Every structure is written in C-alpha cells, then in structure tokens.
Amino acid sequence: MDWSSFTQGAFGGLLIGLSAVMLMVTLGRIAGISGMVSGLIFDRFTAESAWRLAFVLGLVSGPLLLVVLNGSLGNVAGNPEAVVGNPIGGVPLMVLAGLLVGVGSGIGNGCTSGHGVCGIARLSPRSILATLVFLLTGVVTVYVVRLMTGHSL
Amino acid sequence: MKLIFGYLAGLLFGLGLAIGGMTDPHRVQGFLDVFGNWDPTLIFVMGGAVVTTFVGYQLVFRRQGPLFAETFIVPTRRDIDTRLLIGAAVFGIGWGLSGYCPGPAFASISGITWPLVALLLSMVAGWWLARRV
Image (cartoon, rainbow over all chains, first blue to last red):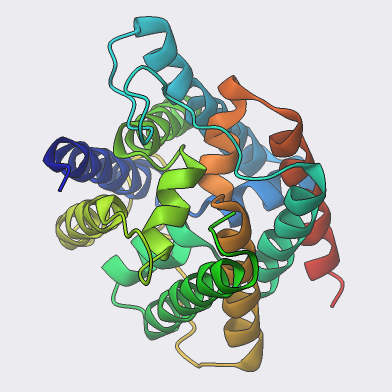
C-alpha cells in the first residue's frame, strides 16, 4: 500500500472541494467542467463565458505551476518527478475515447466533477445514479479490455 | 471579481487534480481496474473532494445568495431519464478506455501530447454531437 499517494490524493481532493465551494460562494455556480467548457465553446460569448474562460485558464495553470515550482508535488504512478502522466494509448484510441467522453457527458449533463463531486455533495439523486453508472461502465470497460488483450491498455 | 474568483477556483481545481494524481491516466485506469492491480488513490481524491464540498455547500447555502452574482444557479431536476443513464454509461466507457475525464484532460495541457490533442478535439466534437441528439 502506497500511503503517500493516498495522502496526496486526499489533499488533492480537499483542494478540488475548496475550489467547488469557492465557485459557489462567489459566483453561485457548480464546478462542472464538461458543462463549463462546452458552454464556453458552443454558447454565444457573454459575461458567463468570461468567468468560464478564466476558470479554464486557472485549471490549466494549476498543474503548470507545479511543474514550474518543481517541488515533486505531482502524483504520477511510478514517477515522483512528473506532474502530468503519459497517455495510455495512441491517437486512434484517444479519438474513440474522447468521442465517448464528449457524447456521454454531453447527453448525461455532466462528468466526474459536476455529477461525481458537486452533484453527490448536493445529494442529487440524478448525480448519485450517474456516478454509480459511469463507475460501473468504467470498471467493466477496463476489465473487458484486460480480458481481450491480456493486459490493461 | 467574477474573473478573479473564476481564475482562482480553476487554479485550485487544477492543483487538486495534479496533486491528487488525476492528471495521470494510468492512475485513473488503475483505480477502475478493481479486478486487477487496483490502485485505490482516487477513492481518496473523490472522497476528499465530496466531503469538503458537502460541508462547504452546507455553510454556503445558509446565505441568501452568492457574493458576486444574483442567485445560486444549481440543477433542480430530480427525475431519472434514459438520457442521463445512457450518457453516464457511454461516458464511463470512454473514461475507462483512456483514463481521461474532461477536467484532467484540460488540466494536462501543460504536458501536451498528440494522443491528448486527439482526445481533446474529439471530446469537443462529442459535445457538439450531444447537442444535436
């Protein structure tokens, strides 16, 4: 058991929670990334788009800040120096996976952040169910890939 | 003010994802690999995030409204429909295949690779499609 990665996980979770609470107390909004970014790209540009853009810039600069600080605060498995891990597969697999992630979070109105964190914290029945469903299909997918290829991707 | 707090919230979120290990697709897939070499790290990330948000929201919702906007805007639907179930199921398959969900995918831009570019573009295409079905 790798307790340092668990401690870092819990601390990272705390920061994600503080982010969600900050966004609610200041702007009155849910920290749901899929809704925020798809709204930013596909809705007409308004005052809403401006804070969404600021959020996305912050989201990108968080890990970048860790890279610049070089303080080994990353939590990449097997590489304590890294902040961002390498992709699991090549371009074709990522095109397929990205499409599924986009279509799924689009028609399901949320992803891991909106349903999995903010929705569960609001005790929303829709979000609790959505989270159980995507955890289940995620686990089954990894299991099936392992069965078919003999190893995880 | 909206821009400043939008940016700060995003910064905290990005720091949390990276420190928690969510910007490593191998760790994410390892968490979903419960019948193999299971990596429980993400339980701590999601647990820490949900508990913090739950407690924080309890305090925040005692207020009449947010500091720099008119009202709290939170989803009010409570019905379960097939779009929600199918969407969540499809999302989980993509998440399992790649180890990326939207937040970590964008947060990983500082370590950009061609597969990540491909994932981000097709995810945006997926959102576009979802608005038309």
